[in-house]
Image (cartoon, rainbow, N blue to C red; front, top):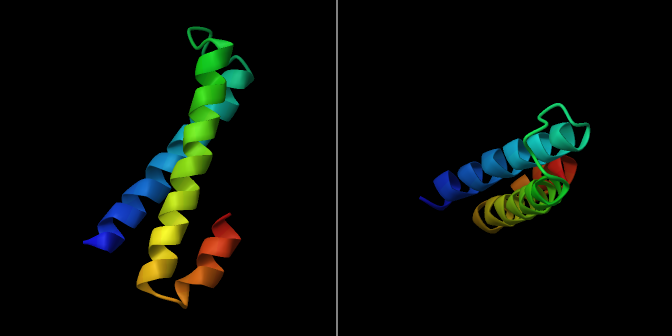
Length: 69
């Protein structure tokens, strides 16, 4: 069950980070600057918490989590 939450955190983090970076380049004009920054911040937090979840469950996954970060 923890692995599911970790995977979800990583996926949502990556999606948020990509959306934030794309919207800063003004591909989506409806996104404001603060929405872009918020998406990037929450994306980074999601990736970090997902990586921590993987590392807690399987110590060998710490290297993979480090590569993702």
